[in-house]
Amino acid sequence: MSLLAPLRELDTVQRHTVLASFLGWTLDAFDYFLLTFVIVTVAKEFDVGTAQITYALFLTLAARPLGALLFGRLADRFGRRPILMLDVILFSLFEFATAFASSLTALLVLRFLFGVAMGGEWGIGASLAMESIPAKARGAVSGLLQSGYPCGFFLAALANWLLVDHIGWRGLFVVGALPALLVLYIRRKVPESAVWQEGARAAKRPGLREAMHGHWKLAIYLMLLMMAFNMFSHGSQDMYHTFEEVNLHLPTGSATAFVLVALLNLGALAGGLYFGALSERIGRRKAMMIAALLAIPVIPLWMYGGSLILLGVGAFLIQVMVQGAWGVVPSHLNELSPAALRGTLPGFAYQMGNLLAAVTATAQTWLAQRHGGDFAFAMALWMVLVALLLTLLLWLGPEARGVGFGHRES
Image 1 (cartoon, rainbow, N blue to C red):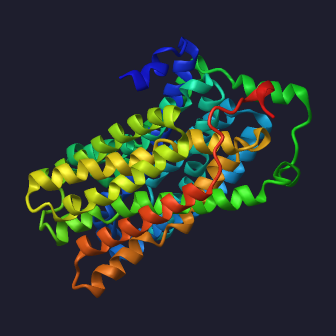
Image 2 (image 1 turned 30 degrees about the horizontal axis):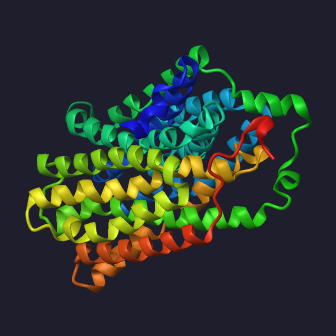
């Protein structure tokens, strides 16, 4: 618990800011994952194959870098707080509109627009939180912020399990508009970043090309790093439902399948909090490398546990490590980013990495098909290779733990 002590030292305003950023990412992820649970149902209503509905997921992922760049630049120019509120309103609006999609084309367009808005939230929320707290609290807050993603995944699974039989898939997307209420909380409780305000008063905000001068190598490195991170995360999550159905023969929507997903997300929450806080003591890169390497010995239990109890333990532990490494990412990327790009570069690198990693599910499916439909083999091999790649990239890269923000920045 001493690792999380910095969270208790935050003042009331800082806690509101961190909570708003956490809820923004949680609700964003909630809205994204709702579609993943109703793909088959939506395909039947539109009388198309499930593969055509998965194009909506691809378009959302493809649009996220565009949103990160667009909203990130707006946040660097006009402030974190107003652009975050605009972003939350937009992704909630497009989520709500999805409930009324009358055709496959309309669905695809709306999910692309949702992806643009979704792409902006993470970078702006992370920069607002990181610029509003003491340097010594960044590790713990980083882990908390990143835990919003598995929390959103869990809430989407819970909503699907409890509500879909009563309100249908369209009703789920109406519920997905509720995050817009977060804007009221941000407007009342969350102030603008003092670091951004200081920079806005000090000088004219540079354009993108000027701000990026001398930082292109860093940007490329961060994109490659986030590609490996997203391969690590999506490699452990996206095909897990398919693994449950094909290899474990668990019916879709069964209580057992839900419990395993719940354990995944509980592990992710614990790992993000622990390793995020640990990085404040031992360093960002070291904490992420330890988490990535510890995932490897957990993989046999995760895929080949032999019983539901052992598979559940493996599901919990693999996400402790995967999301443990991820829990350090918000602080690491914000500390490495120049002040004039802090609203843009972390989010853009994250979302570009996500786009570059979009091949993950397809590659794992191809590997499984080459081995008689064995998703356990495909996912296990993928995770070992990506854990090693991620560790190598972290070992080769820079670190700026504790760097000053605002007038303390060099």
